[in-house]
Image (tube, rainbow, N blue to C red):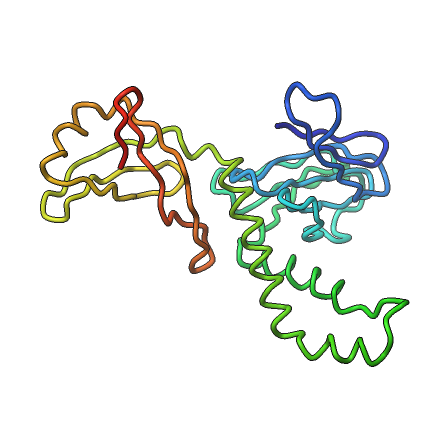
Length: 239
């Protein structure tokens, strides 16, 4: 997919070969001049004539944070993401280039959870006061449920949008632990469990491996691999 900005004050996310946008980003009051995906493909940064740099969650299309506030004094024409995916730079007609810190995943989850919880906590026009008070007794449980839903949505979106299947490299076999060390450009060091009597076979056929069935867990503020399958094309074998 790709993203665009426009003179109608909106950003858009598009899937290739589809005429209708997959997502609308109606977050600016003047033209959107530039857009940039974060390197993990989970968020979108936009900027424009309203002098703002804004961050959006792509799993829901929700606004996350105004990164710049009123700092720039003229239109912002360009935004770009740093190679370590921790900062965004903005270039403005006021003659300045400014650097903004991107919030980590844990902060993004907290922001999205709190906003959804605030919406849930509002009293509906047709809800009686007694029903509202009764509903509010379960607010702590509801907050945790919303947080878990937010994390699950992020995990599903991450698994379907990040190019985690490519570039994985089998490095070496640990006979005592019965696993191959696999280097992933996305997830770092992984372990592929293989019995000792099958390790040579795997080594000889590693070019035929396809990685499938990614299952993620959220731990210590990061998305990490819980499990994935190494499938050998044409050999009907998997690990």
